[in-house]
Structure formats: structure tokens, C-alpha cells
Image (cartoon, rainbow, N blue to C red; front, top):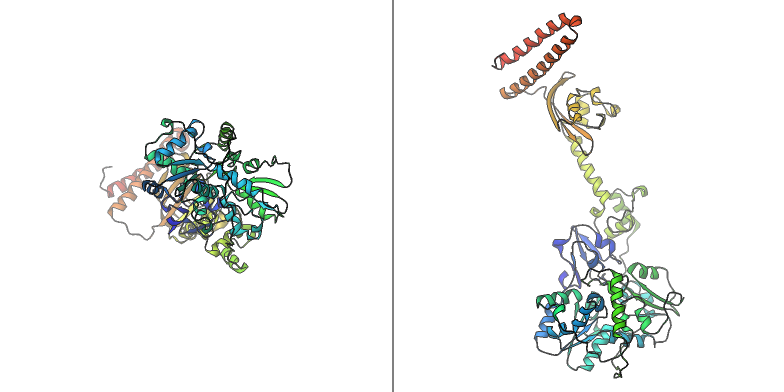
Length: 565
């Protein structure tokens, strides 16, 4: 069940945008039935999809109920608060956080930075044979799954959270430990067998804020107090920003050292592995979230990365370095890393070509590589479809072609004639029924509609005085019914024609035809009278004859319809 996963999808919120697919650094999102689901075995728990989903469809499994139950049990519980708390609860809010935690029921509230200092000391004491720092569990998970060839380059030291959990349990025997931070991967990290018992529950900053709100605890109303400090911290409060661990270890890292590097963000970290690097003799501090832990997916505060960084630095400077003597730290810091390699299913070229052919992209010219589906190229998408991770319908150009083909199919098979005109009433498209009705072919495309039929209706639409026009006309011995309408935004006009030559009309339909004929005759008469007034000396006799003909025609139809003349 997805809700048992660290990160899962709230399907009701998933809206077919594929942004999570596009942003997932390891493509651990499967699209099925239009829904984007996280494949837990492929996921590295980075939380990128949680941060990026515009609809909030991706979420981190909540442990809030477990935490509340643990504290309600009455035992001793200690909170280990990640050093990035200074960015989430800046300034005076941070100084009130210890009091708020104690009001929730925590007996002790301590900074995870204590564990960070210990981890730094142990990491840099290791023999340097190509070393990658292991404070970030997502980086560790990435290497175990996708780059196991570099596992030996990892420094075999636990993360600050695990170290601090063990330190708290050593300091306060019998206590339970709840870690609070911005990281989704920490929930998975405590489930590793080698980390069993170090930390009992992981909460995110988002969950902590929800808990405080549910208890009506406002930090502004809490008193200022200090964290419980039992071990040295030094500069470890800088751990959540780039170079923080190196700074804690006293290592110069201003970017000018060839063999010392601090990097962050999925793109840079994945880019580093793609270059087949030689880690021998290098010291690398990687943080998977861009900018460091201050940009974790479960931060729960809308503030710029630069403001968060500044808040952490200001807190570290204000807290200073405690020169007091602290007891030695004797907890285990050793870590082991296991191969959990995820090899993609081998896909043959023939399988890929079949999918490309199905989606109309077998020709390289049709492979747009637009990325709308979430994959960088059409070939990558086709491979994902073959593996069951994607659907052909994710391709927007493909779906557009399908829709166009279905529309064209309807137009081509309708028994009614259909013609499309441009803004100048030139024919741009006609269906087979129209061609048959008016004995023409596509060779006349580009000509004005008046070349074929009476254009009065279209000209009426063109003036803007109406959006639809309907009439019955006769042409080429065919009596036809025309319905014309305008597509204003597209600057096009549509004509739909039905052959009614062999249709028998009832009385009502005949009345309609007669009325329309009378109307046309009146128009003809009015035109002739006006013309006669202007040109009487040329057309007097002709006008009198035309007037008589028109009046007789009107009388004929009005007599038939029972109307007075």
C-alpha cells in the first residue's frame, strides 16, 4: 500500500501534469491510468517530488500520531532538533522553541548539531583514500542503488541524526528519541537495520508546526529558554548550509582547492557520477538538496534560500562556541553501506522502435524531445513505456495528433458537406461529401467560396452582424440546406451543407421555404425600385416589367400560404 511508503501520492490531487516525472532525479515515478505513483524500490527519498508538485499530490508519510502516542505513554522522551531549525524558526522564535517542545511533553530538547560535531571529528579522522562525506542519507541511498561502484569511496560514519540519537540515549538511559528536521529521507534512514534503536521516530518541520497548532502553542507566547547541551558543538550549527561540515572540521573550502569540494543539488551530484570520477585523494561534502538542508522538502516555510542561509549563520554566530568541558563521546559511529543496485530492465532496440512507431515518431524528424512527458528525449520516454513506467498518452504531440485524426475522421465520414474558409472566404479545407455535392476537388482550395456557391451567407458573417446563418439554396440542380457559422478567434468560417433535393416537406417546412422565398423577392423588388428611381430614364420600361413579375411572384406564394396580399 502506498501509504506505508515514505513518500506516496494522494491520487485525488494528481492532475496529469508529469512535473514529478520531470523533476525526479532517478525517474522513480510510474504513470498508470494517468496517475503518478512513487515506486518505492526505485525511490531515494529525496522528496523532490514533494517540493515540486504544484497540487500537493506527493506527500511524506506522517509520523505525528506515533509521536503523540509515544509522549502520551509517560516515558522520558528527548527531542533532537536539526540545525536547520534556525532557518525554519528564525530569531526570537528559535529561542522559544525549547520551551514549546517541553510544553508538548518532551523532557529534553537538544540540538542535533552535537551529533554533527561528533560525526565531523570521526569522519576526518579516517584514512583519506577518496572520501565522500555521509551526513546526507539521500546521497548514501543514491549510491547504494544507482552507483554501487563508488561505495568504497563513502566514509563509513553514521549521520549526525543517528550519532545524536545514540548520544542522547547514553546520556539519558531509557529515553526515547524523536528527531525533527526538514528531511524525508530520515524516515527511511532510521529503518535501516544497522541504525535500529538510535532514533525512535522522525518528524518533519511541517509535522512539528501542525502539532504545535493542534495544541494551540504559539512560539511568540512561549518563554525564551536554552536547549539541553551535553556535548561540544563548535561550528556544527552551520551543518545545513554548503561547506558547513568542512567548516566544522576546520578544512578550508572556499572553492579554490582542487581536492576539496562541496556540492549540492541533484543535477550537480548526478553530474559528478556521470563523469566517472576518480575520488582518490579527494574530500567531497555532498548535500542532495540544492543549497543544503535549508532547502529540504519538508521545511514548511515560504522563505528564500538566501534568507534561510542568513538565519542559520546568524544563529551560529549568536550561539558562539561553548568552552565548557564536556564528557567524552563513546557511542558507535561506524556505518556500513549495502549494495541495493537497481539495474533498469534491458530494453531492446526493437521494443523501442515499436513504441516510436505506435506514437508516430519512428522518423527522427518527428522526435521533438520537448520534455513535456517528463523525460528528456523521445527515446528515453519510449524505453520507459517499454518498462511499464510511462504511458504513450503522456506525449502531448502524440495525443494532439490523435485528437486531430479523430476530428478529421468524423469530418471525412459525415454525409454532410463541410467546408472551412479563411478570413477572406477562401476555401482551406473541404470533406469528401462537399466535393461530391458540388462536383469539385482539392484543386480549387485557395479560391473564394463564391466560385462554387452563393456566398451571401458567408459575407453576412464576415461583416460581423451575425455569428450564424441558415438558408436553403439551389445550385447545379441541387437544392441544399446550408448552416454557416463563424469561428471568430480562429478567423475562420464553417459551412455545413445537406442535400435536400429529394426530401418531401411537410406543411410547416414548406411555409418556411415560401416565407424565405417571399423575403428574397421583397429584397429583389426593393432593389429594383431603388435602382429605377436612380436610372428611370434608362430603365423605366424594364423596371415596370420587373415590378410586375415580382408582385406576381409574391402574390403567388402569399396566396398559397393563405396570407393577405
